[in-house]
Image (cartoon, rainbow, N blue to C red; front, top):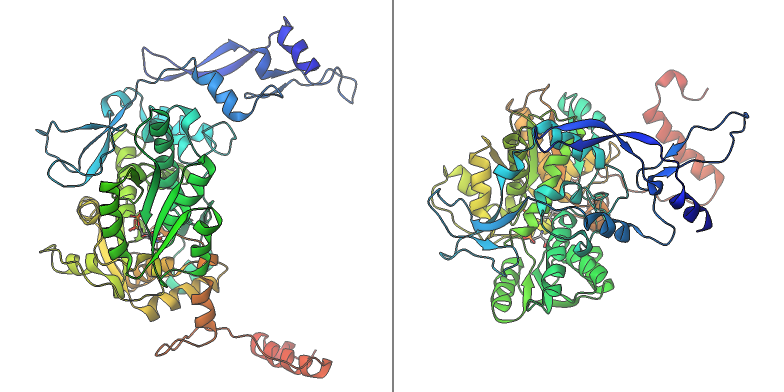
Length: 534
Ligand SMILES: Cc1ncc(COP(=O)(O)O)c(C=O)c1O
Ligand SMILES: N[C@@H](CCOP(=O)(O)O)C(=O)O
């Protein structure tokens, strides 16, 4: 503290180079600004070699009694945003005048249709693509509140008006874009295959990206004294995990409706541990969804499913992140597993915003992949988009997408039609084989990612996806949430499934000879013959 007070009163200001926004040209300019004492650390008096040391310039140096939220509060009090967003009816024509403030509690348009969050694109367009690319790039990997989050590093495009103080974040996003080198080369003859690991996240799925936005807005609504006593969702296990974690972090009650015996133990224990009010209901996800919609229209419980378009504002940042991770080069294909169908639209929206705002010049083709046991979108696509019919979703190892009546069907169709998209499906055997094959190359993916990989395999085999096409498969949850599926597969315990890539443990007696016998046999199969027994 003593050192800091000395620094604060020090007359020595070191100039430093800094980007700043020119209000006239809308471009970022490089200029020399005076470095304030809170951002300049002169270091020790002399270096170890006797020469004066290079000054250490730390842009976000905080006082010791200040945390990152306090620091953001101090910065925020001097900055004012001109960006804004509102709810509008989804895919409304240019003549529509219907809109709602994001501070209203509304999930549906007057006609009962879906809503969308519409940003003031004219205001955002005052800044060119290079500005946005540079701004977003400058925030990656920092701890500056709230930009250390992959979602909030794009705050101006997400919830531009929310006070950073109201944000509830676990610094989600910034997930690994994994080069699937061996899987791509060995099984598909592809050199440029990538897996976006959205499941390597705070609660183990991509839902964190949307939930930080929704719970932050709820936090704001509660401060504004809006009637929100708790937040609720129906879930196949991942939405409930994310909701309960973010609500617990903010001290907001959460209520989750789960279909009894249809989600994994790892998923079930998440809301329980986070103190949610958990209802295990004797129905499927579609039944839970119907119930939560009825309940949230009666009680002051805010709806957290992706019917609520706020969620998709966070989820769309995964698409922006993919472009960013490729240095703003656009991949040819992005494959997303689909259930309630919010995420496929979120990806479309993220890519489209980047195109409209000049960060990239095109968008990738999107593929939505469904489990054959829960495939209403696939059937609709195959019918030539002729008369959507919900289905009764059957049990699938991809249990988080066991959904027969997806709430975002219209959004998904829009995304696919506008991205020259494709829908594929995966049988239980196909998705489990694909998951196991991917695991055998060093991944540890969930069955839903197995569905997406099956779509890739089919499209690659039919030549639709070419060997050189840069392709991203979106992995939506962590494999550790779905270990039972792997246990069943590797124990060859699934009726009517060959489990071709099962790798069962070998039972062996605890003596040296038995262990050696087993190992020799193993090595004989692995090692070129000439080397065995050397
Ligand atoms: C792991 C996982 N993958 C994929 C999905 C599908 O996402 P969406 O419902 O947005 O289509 C879900 C949830 O539905 C999920 O939990
Ligand atoms: N897979 C989801 C299903 C609900 O989807 P949502 O995106 O509408 O919340 C889950 O994990 O609950």
